[in-house]
Length: 232
Image (cartoon, rainbow, N blue to C red; front, side, top):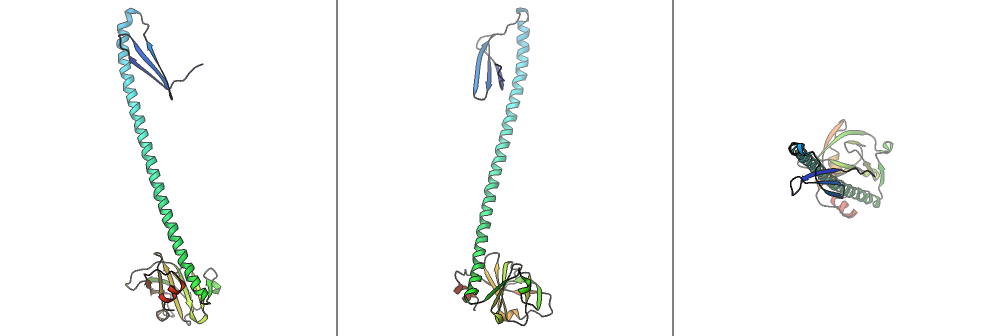
C-alpha cells in the first residue's frame, strides 16, 4: 500500500557518504540510514550538487517553518482577541440585564404603590384612554439645569385617582384643568417627579416645555417609601 508522507527530511550521517532520511506524518515518523548509489566518476560532482540543493531545501524548509509559526501566532492572537471580545460582550449583556431588571422592579413598585391606594391605571398604548386637552414635546432637567433622561414616566391625575404610564416621556398628553403630578424613572434607576404646583406652570398654549424635576437620590424599597418621598 502506498503511504502519503507529510514531511521528508534528509541529513548527513556520521560517516562520509552516508545520510539519514526521515519520513513523517501526524504522530508517525520513520528514519532510515542511506548510502547514495552513484557511479564513482560522478560521485564528487553529485555530492557537490546535493549539498547545493540541500542548502536550498533547508532554506525553504526554514522559511516554511517561520511562515507556519507566524500563521499559528496570528491564529492564536485572533482567538485570544475573539475570546476577550466574547467575555466583554457577556459582561455588557449581564450588566444590561441587571439594569433592565432593576428598572423593571422600580416600575413595578410605582405601579403597586398606586394600586394599593386605589388608583386606576392606564397605559399610553391605549391613547384613547389618556387624558385629553393638551399635548407637549417635553424636555426634562434637574434642579441644577442638567438634562435628565427617563426610561418611563407616570402621570398622576389627582382629580380622577388615575395613573397613566407613558413609554415615551418626551411626548406628554394631559388635561390642563386637572391637578397633575409627573413621576419618572431615570436611566440611573432613580425616581424623580414634578409636583402638582410646578406642573401648573406649563403654558396652556405651549406645544413644548422643559420641566424641572426633583430627583430623589434615595432608593425606594417599598410603597410607603415612595409615598413618603413624593410627599403624597
